[in-house]
Length: 199
Image (tube, rainbow, N blue to C red; front, side, top):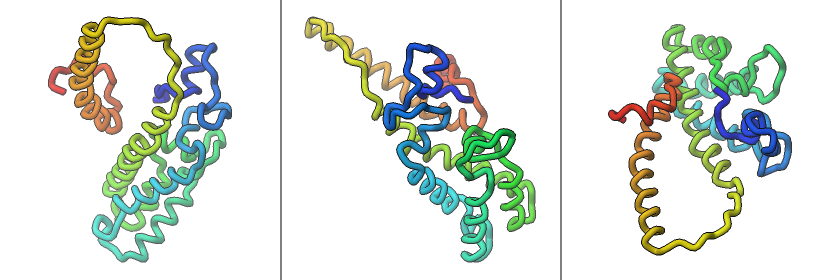
């Protein structure tokens, strides 16, 4: 949905923000953070997600066929890191577009479009979860924090603020953890974490 607070998006919303990535100082694009400073980690996560979802037990086939399928998928246009207009790429895949070429590659093994579609979705959900925890969170935490001028406060006021922050965090954290998989699967609006008391 291109809503993440990346330098690219922050710059689109407020031109006083820098469009440069804080890690490499290059102009940021919407998914630049997935391959900065290197695409090595992303490629490893793709490999791990393929092994996790498309293996001998889920496909009910030999290790050699599974290995060939993994290589075939990694060489698909939808898994390549380039940006050609009107052509599937890793950017379109990570943005949520499930390419028919991915489904068709799996269907050659499963002989079922429904099974191939389900496995494609499971693969991409697993990949997105890994990207979130192993790339997005470290990218965010590596961002330099703006310096704040310290203001004198009383000890009791500081303790009260810390207790309030801790209480809000203990309420919000489980809601966010519950909402995130629903957002991946159903594109559920983030306001649901505020308005839905069941989460």
